[in-house]
Image (cartoon, rainbow, N blue to C red; front, side, top):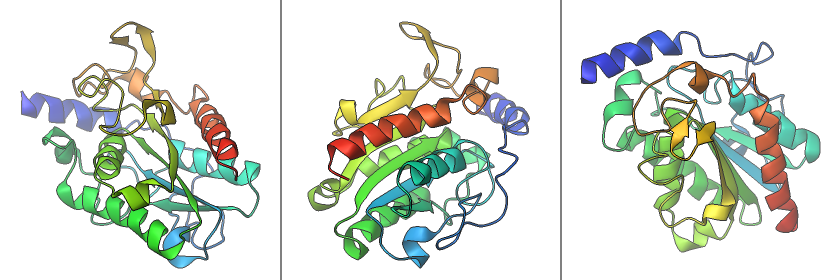
Length: 232
């Protein structure tokens, strides 16, 4: 069964929908593309956006939904957003999806490090987060383990194709449900166009459709509402 799941993932991810503009490196103060390290390499901003990409996506932001959400936030909050992708040792490898965590402990540790760095380096920043596919498992595991002090800075998050959606009822354990928006293309209670959202790693066409459906900007709208309410 595990081999069948892996084979299906391998076929599917060759068709990840890429943003044609998502090239190169955002770095500090640059235009965020497939790599953005503005928290690590840049100065503190009022908003820090932490993102984990889908399996096999390039860079630390990926080339699909991540850069869209980052750029949308920057448009709404000019010069107020630092975008930071979760990089090595998060390799976004296919085999990592089938473990109990839905990713590796090393990946979770790196994501946790991004949150704790935002807290220690930029104690006044408001943190928002997101992930796509395996990246949702990375971020979920990180957020649920954050200390109370770090949690105070975390405002909201968006997940696309949440691989632990069915298992965790669309939530992050211990995190306010109203502060997380999950995009899973639910067609009826418990039924989804996205094959990973029902409890199996069925990477189908629905799992690839978030960018083409315009769900990236919808995520930005949700995060903006939460950030505005938080006084940014």
